[in-house]
Image (cartoon, rainbow, N blue to C red; front, top):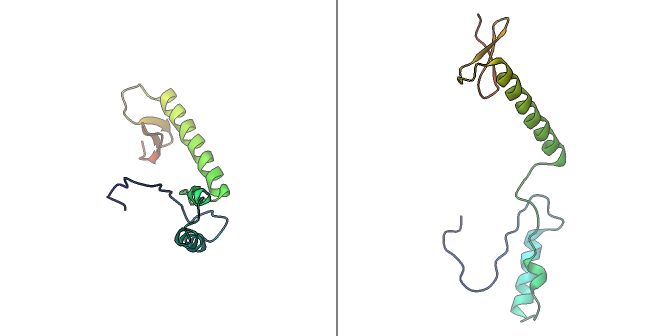
Length: 106
C-alpha cells in the first residue's frame, strides 16, 4: 500500500484483472520511452484493467442475490411489528430484521 503522496508528475493505477495486454510488458515499454526522452507519454497514463476481479457471470449472480435480499427484507417488513425482533413465518421458520431465515422451531 502506498503511504506517501506524490507531489510532482502524473500517477496512474493499473489493475491486473481484465487487462487486454501484459502490464509488465507495458511497464517495460514505458521505461524505454521514458529513458529515450520521448515527448508524449500520455498513452501510458490511461488506467488499464479492473479492480473488480469478478467475471460478468459472477457480477450477474451478485445482482440476483441483491434482489433476493431485497425481497426477503420486504417479507420481513410485511411480517414484523416494526420493533426489529425476528418475525415468525410458520412451521418453525423465523425471519430476522436483516432478511435472513432461521429454523428455530416454534
